[in-house]
Length: 119
Image 1 (tube, one colour):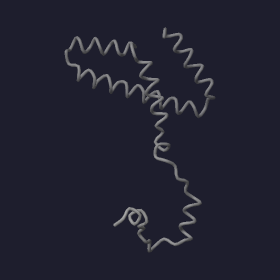
Image 2: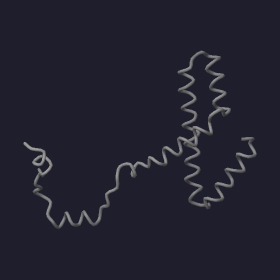
Image 3: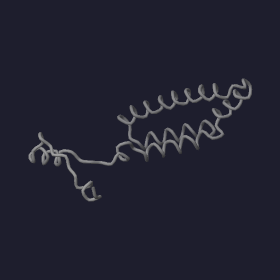
């Protein structure tokens, strides 16, 4: 079997007609899986949170706990779960607030909050 015969091979459809194929083509827009997943948002949020948490009080507390207890894996699991919960609360609040307030107001409130807390 040659390479062209492999790429040219198509399975005939017994149910689909030209009319249903045309309807599907006009109603469904194909987008790559990368766009559907939102990798850009994932990478951006990871980078922002990672940089914000470096040297933060949370990291210093984890260092202290790991040194005191000599149980680094348990501290890692506990700190990770805590960060997931706190981040989840932030995401939920952000999603709810975004429905009612302009984005610029949310950004200003976050800036004021971070500047008053000493960051």
